[in-house]
Length: 219
Image (cartoon, rainbow, N blue to C red; front, side, top):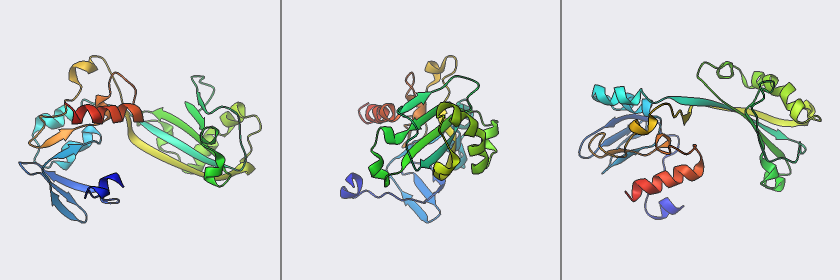
């Protein structure tokens, strides 16, 4: 609403096919193209050279030095509450997931029609078996672990189960990352970068991403 009230436009369901860099960069989408004063790239670094068809090899080389963890998140809509904990991290290898979050222990279940929402998530490499499993197989993969954490967990209480995945969920801060963290400007004329690769040394989360955007705007 804030953006649209100031004559901005949000184009949903409009994948970008190409970015033509220059004094006035052009963004080409499935539904047409638009010329801008400036383009700010917020996505994974590796995807940028794929969209800039005539990019120099230096940008492609630099972009490919950044590595990401993927994520698989099983979202369960439950008929009843499962426990009293909102957020539980796990490092026990006997448990199949890294974190389980009962969202409706923070936000009232009344906001979800009386249902209870559970997130079961893993951060993993692209080679993880979780990347290959169907939605039903992901639920089966976690089922016994869910029963260990919630002893009264039952399949009959599951109203909906959906799986969401992302191959570039969070950047990996490896050795000497601080020396090669991407700068905001200087990549190409009127093409800037502002994304999760710049929240170092903090973790990827909403607060740090907002702070990164604020730092970009006020540099």
